[in-house]
Length: 451
Image (tube, rainbow, N blue to C red):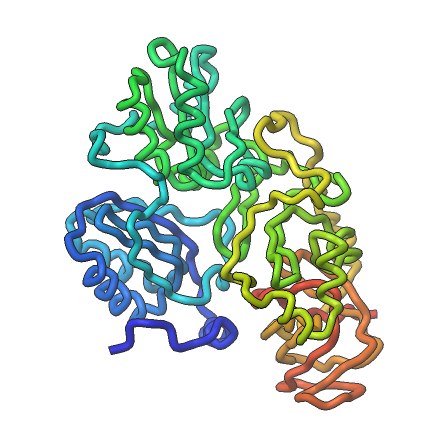
């Protein structure tokens, strides 16, 4: 029986597009005693693969941690697969604010030692003695109490693009690093301060709140459902957002906008910006913040060294990477001397800029027609591949490539290949390739700008 993926990301994206169904990006977690994680993992894969559910899931003896993409019309059937297990009956699903049908393109379920790498010995304290859960309005109320200390239990690259006002934002790359740092920093406030904590979806705070109660903190509180659930509540109940900026997420979107505030800078030029990207050099793959101007000038690279490398012949690039973990095996988190405007640790509470309001009249003035969808991006040669679904595309056409992460990128076609052969014009059904100076994603659409 199939217990692993058999399709590439490109093949899966094509099937999603052909199905034409809306998908929901969501996350959930549960701490529970699982005697046989491998058996549990295989049961989930069989059930979820049948529903075309995709995502990244970790299971361990201590529970499950999942980020997933589910066909919207299968959500009830998906809930049924969870209800089979007593510890997941009635579990809260944190549904993403910004939906993207291509947020996940594989179903990956891994057995791990822990569902979150916290570095704690769970036998040394009562992990069930957790902090008090607060809903959005309750969290806001306690934030305004001068006797409250609020702590962000995410990593520096997450808090940099968005955080709660007045929060302590540790300059750490992993959750396990933050626990002893915060414990030492707050030693003098165990008895008389409210310790208020939050994270993306709530899972880190489940363990952190129990740990800090064990360390002697008397008044421990946590944001129920994390930033994701907080955002849902403030939107539905018209509550003021005390969170400013973006919420970093771990799928290809790399962020959900919570408010129009921009609190971070392009790491290369210092311009207000909160769009993460990964360096185009497969031997680097650094995660960093890059504005559109620097993206074009640096060709999606984090440094001039990486820019030089991506222009080398492929054989030389491979030789440079020999013996190193590269590409998707590496998730470097934005610490580099080449990034002159990287901020972490103490972060601003005031926005540096606001997201530019969309000019509706300008959008009407720019008439365009969708001609195709992205199928692949060849990083080494900087070649994009699209399937022409409508109309035709010719040399000299001005096009827009549009996507949730790519934004709106405009260029003029100067050279065109259809089905592997050079051509002047391509038509419906053709697979076309042409060179572009930036990375595209499988969710991107190709528009032709009309005169």
